[in-house]
Image (cartoon, rainbow over all chains, first blue to last red; front, side, top):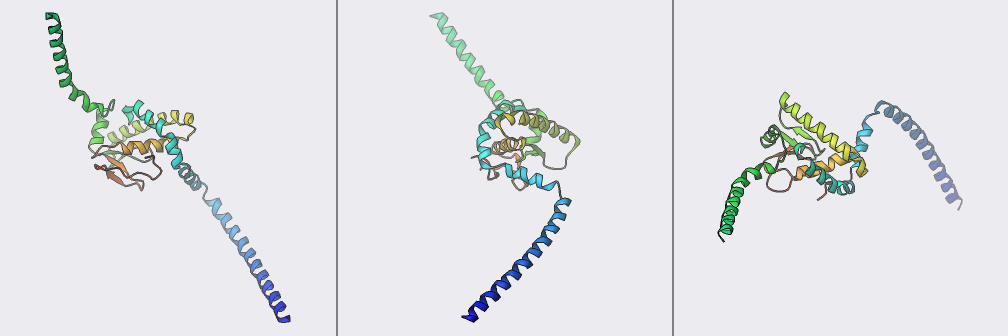
Length: 76
Length: 135
């Protein structure tokens, strides 16, 4: 019984150590990522535009797009 | 009676004229209002449709080709900018939807760009389009 509680204590202690190590690593990582985001300001905007075009958007716009092509045949 | 016969004869002549004129009308009807230089560049595969809804130059761009493609794309963009807000869409979303349809409408032998950006020649089957394109 004594052994078991000792083991639990040891485990939780070890767990605390892991958590504290994780916190240190996390702090270091966030510090690093902070540097990276400052260096790349333009690229995420392009990605957002691509994501904004979804299948339900193209399906919704399809009838009007077809009309536009019909009405402007010289440029299509 | 005689008068009716004449009018029927005239109708027949009218139909014959219409039948003769039809092939002349039908060919440009495919590309109604298209500038001859643009129609020729399309047929020659010098320009092709891109998934973005804009026209692209396939090979090396000559000044004439660039001027023509730029002019068409500026006019396309103006139309997209006019239509998109009413459809509660961005210009890119509207243009992309147009691109889906223009690629689907390419004729065999015409060029178009794959979703990966590769120039392809339209065959007799369906065109390779972005998965987000409407059926």
